[in-house]
Image 1 (cartoon, helix red, strand yellow):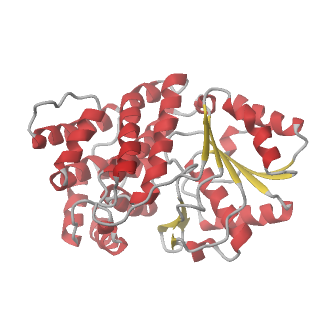
Image 2 (cartoon, helix red, strand yellow):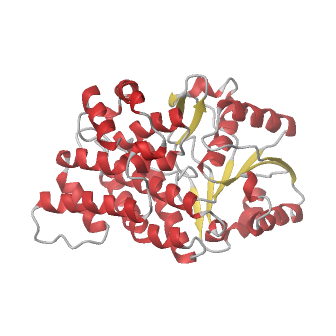
Image 3 (cartoon, helix red, strand yellow):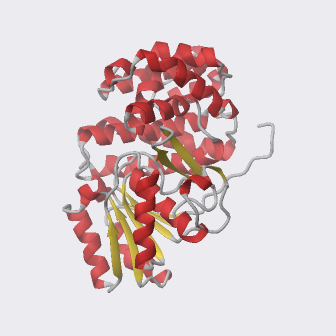
Length: 385
């Protein structure tokens, strides 16, 4: 750690089975009479959504609901949601859903108080006025968007994902981690979201900007996620595994916005946008190759990852312990049924050179532990392909 670092998390987090029942109390804190509800449309008929809506009805709060959210939501979706929010004159936003849903809610909150288009805020700390208060209830254990300082919105015209980052103003004011919200999640979604959470913790832990506070948060996230990802994917109704996944995802979300991420996210950003793959799947496809490439830059931390993933590395040479981490990451992806190659997910070979150039321009060398040139990125894409 060669520069002055900092760590904080402005979100109040409530966790445990049934914790969503405290929602009316939180809304009273904000004196909320009109609420803008952003919800994954697939959740409308679930018992969990019905329970939340019943609580809102009992509280006599006027609710305007927006559910037209696609995976990797577009700027057009944000504009449509923002127009509805303005029309409702809502003073608070509630998001119920996965990362896409929470990211749309964040973007609407930013526009509600700062104006303009969401494109205006691409980058780091491009807005100054606090967004509308946001309460987030994640229904996937993946992005950590409820506590992270970023939201990702797709610019369909440029075929890329815009990252809007503000560590202090972009996280939700309150996050509710209730395992009952995850009971109906499809196994594929559980898998891709869970790997995404693991990548957040892993890349944040080995980031050039990591510090002792983010290390402590991330190593516990890696421990929780690696221990619970397989049983959670096998049975999302497993309440203990679900809560541990939610906590691991949130812990990683508290850190990666402050440390930055690495080559996995850099590469997956362009893979996902070009080939319309989910963010989690794009990360999972790139993870084993990038983990192997980055290992020599920080074998000490890789050895700690191996230990956090449950392997006894005491007495082993550091580089051997580091290689165990790489091997176990690959095995985890294989156990979860992640396609072994980019081509198996529809990525075409003629796209690799252009995506390598895009990765260089994105400048993730600010955070990635190993310097990566355009030719390195092309080599990584070819290995993953």
